[in-house]
Image (cartoon, rainbow, N blue to C red):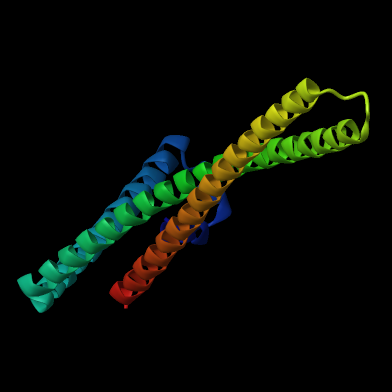
Length: 193
């Protein structure tokens, strides 16, 4: 296009100004069409060269190389699936651990309240024992309440221990999941090498 435009300008500005608009349109259209045909031919040649190179690579790798690539891709997909599963398990374990810790704190608070009540009952019983006005029935009732509160306190302590054990188990499972995730990442990095 530029070459033909240069030819037109070399003829002279007066001559160019006398050329009809239609003629200029035809010249510009031919230049554009020719440029497009040249570009298309260049791109077609490039595509053919790339196709030849691709075929050479396929021949160089052979079916064994392609199989290795497919095996590698399958291993990566399997690794991604395992990582996804481990991540989901880890998230679930964290949620369960949070729930257990919440229950543990609630039970600890209840245990402390019962312990305070127990101390108050002990103090009350001590006062009753020292008081001359206390009767045997009052003492018996106070002892029964004391025994009842002791039993409740023991039950709460058992529950707290159970939750502590469950929390420890969850932490152990979390550690195992993190270890497995680390192993999978190492395997993944080795596969990528």
